[in-house]
Length: 295
Image (cartoon, rainbow, N blue to C red; front, side, top):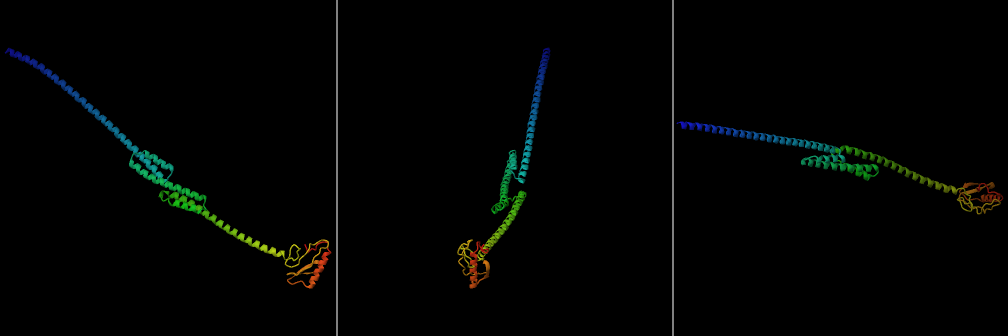
């Protein structure tokens, strides 16, 4: 019995030792497992935190991108609105620059379509301005006036109404000035034509009067003849010039004393008149100077 008891005692001691080892081993394993679980949990937590951080960064970046896009679209919209209101080379360039900062293809496409319309309007406006300027420089030219009016008729966009009004007023003013100038030119031409007709009439009348006056005095020398019919066949000399006598005339002279003569109208010289005329010639031959009526 003693041996069994002792064995049991030893067995007990061994059992206690084994049990202790087992307990200690189990505790270490449990601790290791625990520590491993804690590490894994920490790693998971860190990963989650990292993932959240990355997600937050992405969200923030996306938000910033959207804000930039929205801002770029606003800038494009404002630039396009200004170009539509006031078509110009600078405004069109501003729209083109703004489109480069917009990522949305849809927005860019819409802006491109609108910009083409603005460019077309600007071309029409520039053509109208040039046509009006050409007409202003030559307002008497009806062809240039027609070209200006045709160019203005193409400015149909409501936004171009102010420009159209300004250009049309310039055409109207030039037309008014041209009409006034044409009226003055027409009046001057009529006055000049009337003056020319009057001058011709006066010249014709003066020519007829001169012709009549040149033949109404009756006495001419051998270089010509007159309507009264009296001719002088020789040159009058201071010392006894001779004259051949008289011929009949159409507006007769009746000659009296001392070489004076009086025109009495359309009848032929009588014998008495011829004698008186011959007496006048003889008296004249004795003079040393020509009678006063000769001059």
